[in-house]
Length: 343
Ligand SMILES: [Zn+2]
Image (cartoon, protein in one colour):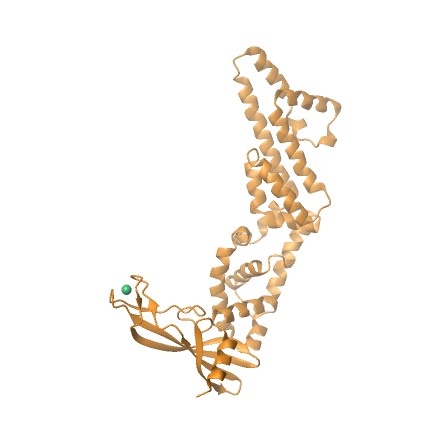
């Protein structure tokens, strides 16, 4: 038996809180097997919540862990089965570092995914002495975790990009803002027509009449007639003109020479103050925020689409070793989850 101080040292190296190394040996000249024991002698019954130390059976099994130096490390783990004296049910203990029925530790899975994303499946397999099938199992499992953490980008991948081209287009977003403004104009006009007081009704109708095109135009493109039209409208329907001002503010954001980061904060501010009047536009902005910000960083609509395409190409290249669409999709998901700023 190895000395206690050596076992203590191995326990420290392996570093799974609550577990200690009880023995070790070399399987081959570069494979190390370490036996691990849970220091706790009792476990909590998941059925009734009572604690018990009555071991029913022990299941030793081998799981692979991250390497130490040049050694591949395997752990001989004892997953004990307890029989609860209170409810008589049998249960096996949870181990924090390895999932049930898995042959690798959680931290090894994490390492493999990171390596696949940084290089590709074939090279990761070689470096870790794993088959592509083993790596694929790990990737599949991580995908499930990624999808949950991935809500803001999920829609992008679900529709796998072709739509991003349309929606991230600044003119497309601008169009939606204009549509909401125009919809409000129509609603206000209908409201005005229902006013009982004749003088007030006529004042409002004449104020809003023929305002459609001035409202949709850029401030700097307005001629004198249109300008005075809008200043009359402002007296009659200040809220509608406030929407016009925010529409123009939105255009300013897109036309100013700012980075994606700066645009992000301006758009956050805009959506916060405009949600009530431009609900659809705000939803679109939130849904496509990644693509819209890519537009700012790439300056042109075409550039934003190109940025996304480049990213996909890079993922495809790294996917070397994975050959079907499901795998490709999984990689896109993982890639965005692990490195959202990759470009
Ligand atoms: Zn129980």
